[in-house]
Image (cartoon, rainbow, N blue to C red; front, side):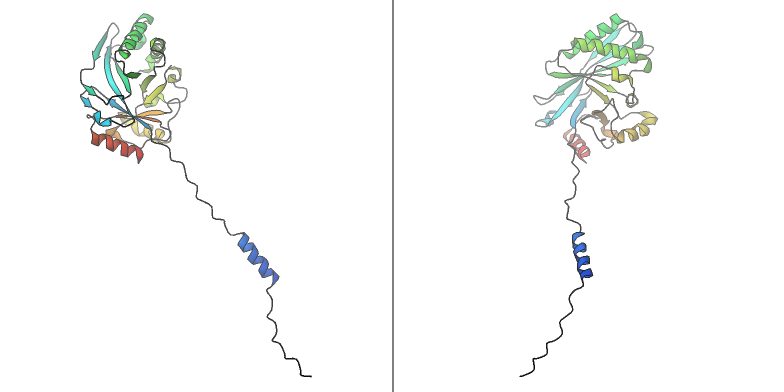
Length: 263
């Protein structure tokens, strides 16, 4: 009988410890997870302030932009009210939503706090009649830099005006940045909108801009106003952005405003 051929020694099998390590390594590999995408907030609704000067805004045709135009200026004194109606032409595309803005100015020595209830009622009636002068007006906005001593009288005026305005007509007021603090008097104002103006704020401007950069504080959440010559990034949470231009609006100025708000 021939001797059986000798077989080569078998290769040593893998060690169980090595296998366990390999399996754990595979199991512990990170799974490919799709990166989280932060939702991008839509750009705010834009409203252009059109002040007392000739404004041709027909280039806004087809754009979702509203216009807040100066309808009149009221010079207020303790014994009289002088109405200065808009004298400059305003041209807008058909169908543009128009907000009538009325500027209230106290003459030197005057104070709204000294207006009697009868005078406040008469002033509310005058403002209501101004808002009804144009059938295409969709909202009324008051621009009044009320002093602390006039807060209560201003709230009284707004309440009387609210009772007179047509049902469904929004009432808006512009405001100072310093009004937008917790417990502010404007929480008592019967208005749909407060528009803090973050421009022409004087030496305290940097402080207020820094505060607003973190978002609009209540009770001013939602709307704000910026000036083209004092631009700052639009804070988070702004749904309506009013824009003031110290010069007449042009297509180029509007394009720059759009680019700034979307940057």
